[in-house]
Image (cartoon, rainbow, N blue to C red; front, side, top):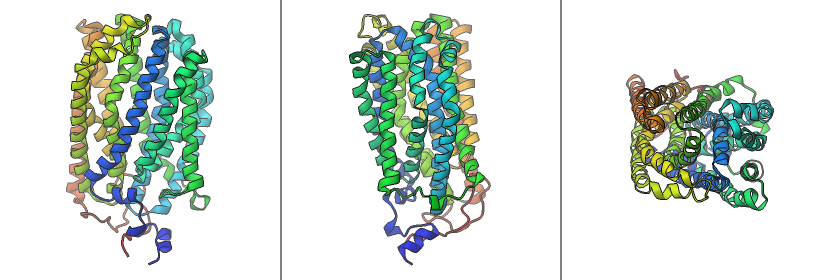
Amino acid sequence: MSETGDLESGCLPHRAETAGVALLRGDPKTAIIRLSAPMIAAMLLMSSYNIVNAIWVAGLGANAMAAIGFITPLFMVLMGLGSGLGAGVTSTIARRIGACDRSGANNAVVHALLLVLGIAAVITVPFVLLAEPIAVLFGAGATAGLAAEYARIIFTGTVLFLFVNIGYAVLRAEGDSKRTMYAMVASALLNIVLDPVLIYWAGLGVAGAAWGAVISIGLVTGILLYWFFVKRNTYVSIRRADFVPDRRVIADMLQIGLPASLEFGLMAALSIIVNWMLVATAGTDAVAVYTAGWRVALFAVIPIAAIGTSVVAVAGAAYGARQFGKLRVAHRFATALGAGIGLVLSVLTFIFAHQIASIFSYAPESAPLAPMIASFLATMCFFFPFVAPGIVSGSIFQGTGRGVYSLVVNIFRNLVFIVVSAYLLAFVFGLGEAGVWWGIVAGNMMGGTFSYLWARFYVNRMIRLRGAGPASEPSHEHTAPAEGGIWPPSGACVRDE
């Protein structure tokens, strides 16, 4: 069989298969480690940028930090939409790659790009025009003007933020996390350089922080466009010849992408609720503490989030190949790996809480916040080890096409366990600001445990009903599965000549 013939029928011969695709179809433990490592490096650098950005903004005073904090939930909605759609795209493409439907994967990419352009056209103008009323609604008060100034600039780049997330999703779906890392690193480094230049040297203040983000994401957009349309050396291709309009493809992405986007909306809602509780118990300075300290907490969560993004691709490929036993291996291994990393970071954060807090309080205007930031970090570090069960379990659901399941576990984790715990400790038990912190920790512990147990039951039930599947080679059956989207209608896997 010729290489060209295999390309047309769906699967490349093994010797022509890209390293990333071969990795996805192999041992799930190896795939998770090798896919996660570049993503961890890149996402840590991106998170480092967020911390550096907070440090530079801290020099402008507590009002500037609080202003960005009030816009953060709205920005999380945008990033959540991009990341959620990205999860849907990764799952859809990875399942087709696992089932050896390469033309279907190519078609899905074109649908994803058109979907992003349509969404950006709808939401950009409202986000820009309603920035100040939204900031007021979120409780910004006297900082609403600064918050709106920051928001208007950020949301002019909506199409760029969404496109970049889809580009990353495509690369992850075919097991190419290294190039994702290169693009993310380039963006973060440029942003780190631009922030002090635009904020202080150009005298733009919080607007400079926003312009730095938009310019850097524009650079990444250019890099991705070059790889997809000029160099053309990815496993999937973006070609008009492969595009066959099909609403089922969009539905396949959205049944994962919309619930995943809503999960980030839940995080934004959680931030809004937390900000409200903090203002009610301790004033706007508490929001500034939360804005600075939460960036450090997110930094610690990044390695676990990177593992989760890798699990979506690994689970999608295993599900597409009907190798259900790999799902159980991936779930257990990724959870244990993420919890171990979280435990190490928890210890380090607890030990160095005061030193970390000092870098956010170097200016006279923000110096009074140092003890509160240190207290926040010393509490929040207990949050880290329990993040992995929730994130990894959600990724298993997303990879297998069960986006609604992932949404449900996150509703319980964020809006039931965390919010209720924080409210009870802060108001009912009268612990105030500290009660909010401990409520986040306690709620996450309960939510992570609930998520893990549900995902474990789901995978075990699938194996009982269908069997673990072939040990390594994808099944040649083309029967539609009970869940997880459209089953590729043609093309048996030809891995070796």
